Image 1 (cartoon, rainbow, N blue to C red):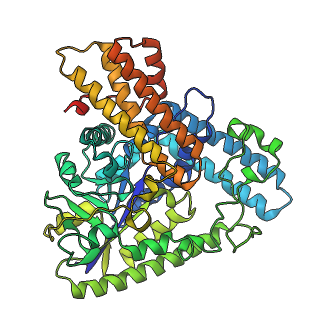
Image 2: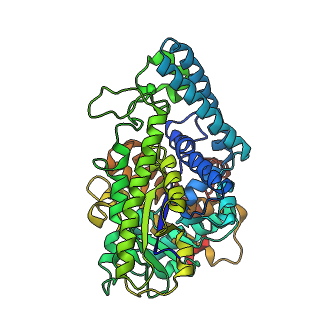
Image 3: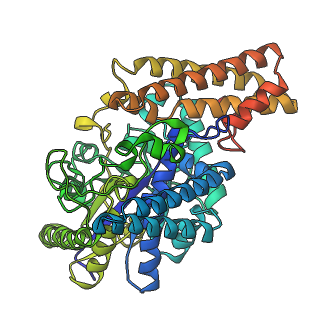
Length: 528
């Protein structure tokens, strides 16, 4: 038996971005980049672990909004088209760089990378969600859910019905795609408030992750800090984030991803080469990332040395050993001081691995392999399996918290985005009112039923925590603001039409085409 456990929890999530009204749309690249650089590379490593018979364990949450995009036929077709464009671009790059041995090698390297990624995608029938499902069924990877569209739950708690809409529709959609109910849940932004666990319990959720402060400031105080879960009074387990290991990976200043051997994220040919040369390869005639980055971090400043994939791989190997050595030392200490098996919980945004830190999936693979064969103190494990093996823990009330700055909520409610809170709250109230009006009727006309469903879709899309976060972060703020205004205005338009019995079938159809998330969304939950 190991002395303790290490549990990676990767949170795969993106806001729902789908624009059929345009042939190409810049923000759809968020999904395409994540598939190429994060989701498929992780799946390739997980497949290899299974093929090699390595004992391993890891939890990954996939948000329902991301699942909806991964399942969408239009986005899947656009992703394949995008990959073919990048393959063509790397072929042109090989010709352009033929007199430079190192950079022509990198162009060929990217060409092979894009071809291999597209083949994996096509071998899955374009449904990479089902590869996650297959790995879950084998037992080492545990796939859990998140709530609907990543709504910030403490802010939605003022109107419980709108929060139930996120929970009910998110978990139902997850089960419809994955074929099994979620065992655990990732709370959006790790944001918890007392009582949320009771609502999670209602949907069969056994555990969730919360911020370090949520455990450390629990009532009563935790006996073992974040190194053992707490059972809330409702019986749902709360796992706390270990700041030591997450800082080692996540910190921009001292974390592994900043090493000079790793690929430089901010030097992309989409922003550097002649625009006319690139025009046919860019969406919407605007400069954007292509994913082709020829330089390594090197050091501060703009001047960078050429990227060397093999040197980066070796550095990932070294960093995996360093990370594991420190976790083993920590477990050895904790085991001597605890009466239950300690667990180090390492939650991250999945997109850190591959998209932001290109070598991240390789690093994860090395950590899991070294943990299996190079030491005997700890075992990597999914959160659900940890609870199965260790079912008895302290009961306490976790504190209100998030993984925002200092554990607070400021990123999602401040002077730059507070108007979003007001508009979304008003729309939630309107949704509840219109749902109650029709839920009491014995029969609801088909057109009315469709309009009520679309009202619910517009509400959950407006509730995404990504929009206020993007505004606070200062990136793509205009797009985020427009999304909130559009969804709120569409909901109010439909609610007015429902109240006046003037629903226009063609207008409704156009909204159903644009905002098609959660086909079987339950609008009646808002009237409960």
